[in-house]
Length: 276
Image 1 (cartoon, rainbow, N blue to C red):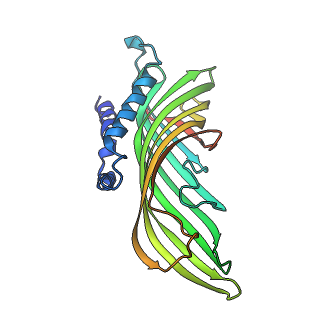
Image 2 (image 1 turned 180 degrees about the vertical axis):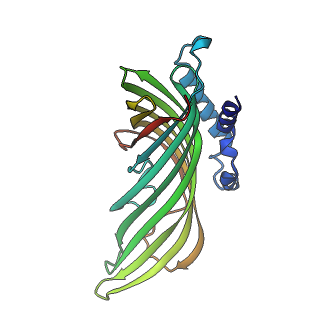
């Protein structure tokens, strides 16, 4: 009983963790990204998802504890939100979920993510003499609730449907170097820290195959994603002039919806039983 209370209280309070307190400090700069909005979307998603299931009898109630551990190499967010035409996009996300089996095969719990990415872009100045090399990298931590339903196809194969919310934040850096054509010289023109916060809601479908009675392999596809992100540059270590037309804006706040056809994001991992 104490474990159920811990997980469900974590779902309701995970966004108030001290690691995310700086989110409130960003509100004066990004007033449209706020906790009231987040809570409305979160609880609406949970209610709509829950309405799909019929109540079960008391004897069908289970209290097993399960975990999901998954990785994804695909950048889930807009790859052009900072750099207009990046020639390098590298992303690795590790997502872990822990939750309780509530009614039937419905799981409710908390998910945590660790994501790191880097992007590069080459920009030729208006004078065609200078080439600016942009290098952006960041590492983000995320936390949020999730809900997953398993539908049995046969003894080994299950169809999965999930709704997840995730608030992630991180601090990275922006490095811009300038190469003079024919001079064989490279100068650092910008070296600045970057702070990023992203609120995302995901709808996923997948398949799970049982290896044994305690573990399964799972593949999930992100069919629909709503995200709202804000970034702000911090301390500047080096800053020199960049030719007009070659600059990039790193202080931005946007939102949008994407589908699997636009960003084919998938997660591959395992599902394991911690308690029987």
